[in-house]
Structure formats: structure tokens, C-alpha cells
Length: 209
Image 1 (spheres, rainbow, N blue to C red):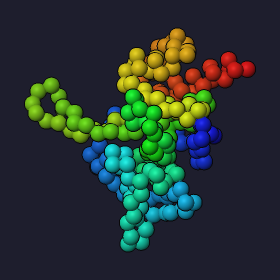
Image 2 (image 1 turned 180 degrees about the horizontal axis):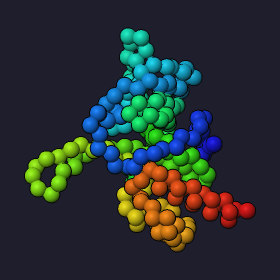
Image 3 (image 1 turned 180 degrees about the vertical axis):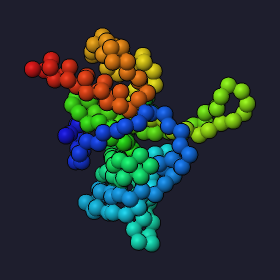
């Protein structure tokens, strides 16, 4: 499948967990994973991977050597997440970090669901969350920030609210509202957003006939 100049050569992976996760065994970005990376020069490297969305870096360990690659040097990488027991796919896609600028730089995005005209992507962040109403206890949690990639290669962030989801699918807002309400879907859930994107794409294809 191609979205603009973006090609996703791997199979779709289905996800089975929600967007907000508190983990006691370390976050995905803090662990080494068995996987592979395809570089822009055509090389395919296999070994242990560690990545950072914030630092825009991929570290690859082969034998006793560790190399660091920026998104400019990487086409995509994939690894098996032993914690959740599924494969995860990340692609380097040109993205304008500042909404006020048209300047795009290669950035890592996780592929959640590929489709046409919209593909669902994610970039996870971490933050501190208070435990309970009283006291000063906090825990660090991981949260998805979702994006939509259209067939022209444009990436739009989905604001983390029900209204933000409606706006992201404004072409069929009434139908999307009814679909979310009828199926009791949550805007922060990967599984539910996959369903919403699939439904939107089905509406779009139906009207293109």
C-alpha cells in the first residue's frame, strides 16, 4: 500500500491493548528487542534494537557493535515486543513537527493500521500520573499520540478527545458519531480507533464507486 510516496512493505499487525499503559517491567523504548531494520542505502540489518521517538534515534546491536541511526538513514524497522508478544513496525516518514511550518523532516511513526484513504499511525509519549486522589505518589505511564496519514502523504494529529476524533473524520462526522455511540467506542483505544478508521475508509470507498 502506498500513501503518497510512502510505501508500507510489511503485513498489517493487529493490536490488542489500549492507548494508556502503566508498566512495571520498563517501557518499550527502554528495552532491547530482537528485530531488523532496512536502511536507505538498501542494507537490511538484524540484531537487537532499541529506539527513541523523542531523540529520533534507532540503536542496532550486532555482535559486539552498537550503531545509532537517525530517521534519515532508516526506511523502517520491525521487532518482536516480548512484553505484549506481537510484532511492531515503525517507518520513517517526512513530517512537519511545527504546524505553522511546511518544513518536513523524517520522523519515526508506528504503523497501527494501514488503509486507504487513511492509515493510522502512533508516536508514544510518557508522562507522570498521580496514583489516587490523595498523597504524592506518581507513576510513569505510556500513552499513544495518534496520527492519520492520507494518500497524499499528509499527516494529521488526532487530538486526544472525542471532539478531536470527530474533527479528524469530519467528512463523515455524523456517521462517525453514530458509529462510535452505537458501538460504545473509546477515542483513546488502539483497537477502537482501528475500527473507526476501517469504518471511515469503508464509507469513503462506498462513495467513490
